[in-house]
Image (tube, rainbow, N blue to C red; front, side, top):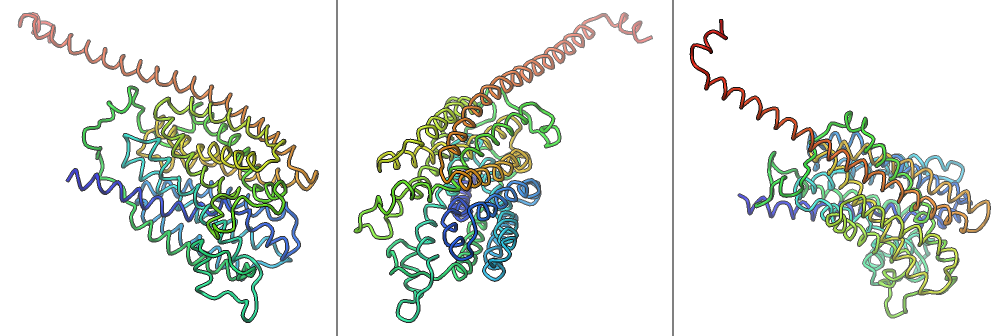
Length: 479
């Protein structure tokens, strides 16, 4: 039985990766910017609102999705998310027009964001329950697919979103498959944004449903062989309901820190492709012989690769040195990177900047859920992290929209990235506060446990003394 249970948890992790790879395509939103702006004549702020609304809805929906996941399990909830995400693109292909950008906000933004919110929380919650011995690392692995999703999506999407050709130039089914697999770069024509939305919507629904079929929670009380909660950490924090969690200063500081760190990252992620395009011009990292696989070493691809790596890397680091210390180091490194971006010009600098920003931004999504589980338990992690993740919804509004407004006003990226760097330094300061509050809370819990033990011991001693008293005395006391 133990061996079967142990193998089950690796199947759950595989399902988590499948689901998260599809959900992570949201980070490649920048590939939609130019096709939509060329098709409809929209400005940058108009397109960025769709990205912001999707992220905000994603975060808000995680609250009821997390509660539902804790009650009925991850499989059904993730399946709902896949269906909603697929519908968002299918409806968008029919409804979106130049005169009504709000239809893009409702389809891609609200419906698509809700689909991501339903599906995203399930792999994280399930994997934490299966891997209490490696929370940081396995959380990083379970969300690594979310960071890598843009990598698999951005290259083929850039080609397929091109205007469709006619006659012999029209892209057939086999051509689309070769482009999707990265074997071909196409012939200069695509399938257009509408057909692409249909294709992507069907793909999202099918693959998320496949990954969701592998998700399940362990039996109550299950633990990995040879591991106990006491051996995993010295100060065990009790499982906390969301109402109680929200009344703690620790939860408030986690929420505020997440806002600052995610806002800074999303200001960059939402405009990374056009920013790096303005630096590189018509040049490319990839040699011609790499074909479609050249996307892996282009700026957006590099960002996506290291976004995924960063989730695993910082998750493991946080298991070794604790969450707040890992946060502080990560935020300081990211802040310095944003400050240096204003002088980026060479190919080497673009490569390093894409890798560094992706590495540190990805770490957010391993550290904050792990910290939530550390401080408030894993029993209600779906609901609890759903509330903490609303910070990402706030950042989803602030980051892309403020970045878009600053670009429209200045036609430059300098101010936006300096501001993003400052937010990272503020986040580093907040992580020190988190460390202090968490330490005091752990000491208080330990002190409370010691007091209860002493009280119980004193009661036992008193009872023992009473038994030792002569029977006559005991009878007199009784009367």
